[in-house]
Length: 72
Image (tube, rainbow, N blue to C red; front, side, top):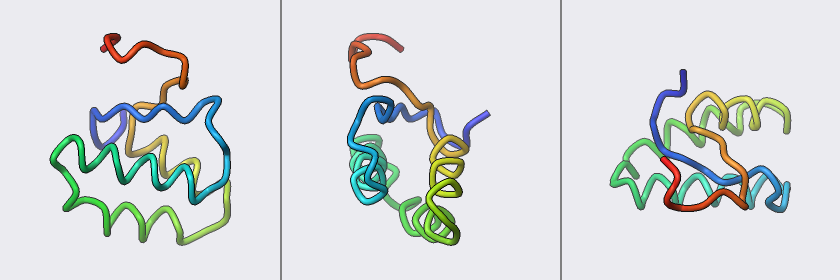
């Protein structure tokens, strides 16, 4: 179970880690939970690329970029 119920559409997105982290940061901002950014960022960047992906999956509901915004 992710730490938040915030959806991030990263499957099919540019896989550059900085792009993925940016998607997560914008999602936190849209959800009004930007105060979680520092904790998330510290954890996501404390290891390698795979660790960052696992951290994203631990914190967010991961979706495909082609999923409709209306699906919840």
